[in-house]
Image 1 (cartoon, one colour):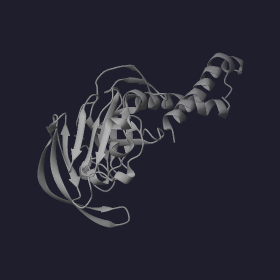
Image 2 (tube, helix red, strand yellow):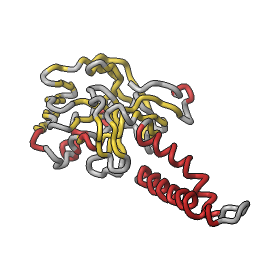
Image 3 (cartoon, helix red, strand yellow):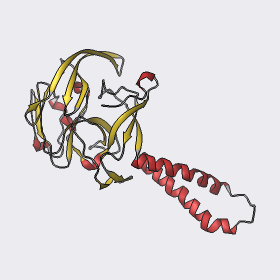
Image 4 (spheres, helix red, strand yellow):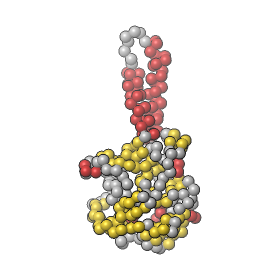
Length: 267
């Protein structure tokens, strides 16, 4: 569901009624006459819809985490806030960028429109920026020939969909200025080759049994989930174009099951 489009259509409809009443209908009503309901309600909702639309389009937008692909950074059920202007000002609905502010940096957690179905919003971590050579061999990540530091950090247990108990290895990864936790499952290969699709710029990637090496094309980004072996990401469906960017995730504002997570910054 394209919520931005629905909000825009509601804004246009209620705004049209407000303008019609302000310039035409009001002058024709008898003094003291009550507004008809089809004028009163849209006029009441118009300023509220306008404020929400502007906030969601240019400042912050809320999202709910639906899956465990970003464990342990983000839990299923986390409600997060996304900064909409960090990566530039975009025209709402069509998402056309009109002003650059900052470029996504390696290690940042970013929300974007899924390249194979732009009606879906995904959240992953930025691994490679335009021009980067991203290599993931035997579950060791390298960027432009530099192996990323990875420190063991014990184990992490969680319940997967279907009530499956999962025990994963936890590591601390240092990517650019970001140090964050990731999960790995020893029994799962670095890439399930049978799940790799043909995507735009597929020729920029070389896959083998040990992993892959990809060169990120101009205007695109390479994304991976922190739950490395349980994430559908750029390994399988390709690069994220700049026009699909929604914003930078920065805060957990609510979780019905774990109140202690409320107010935590996202790194």
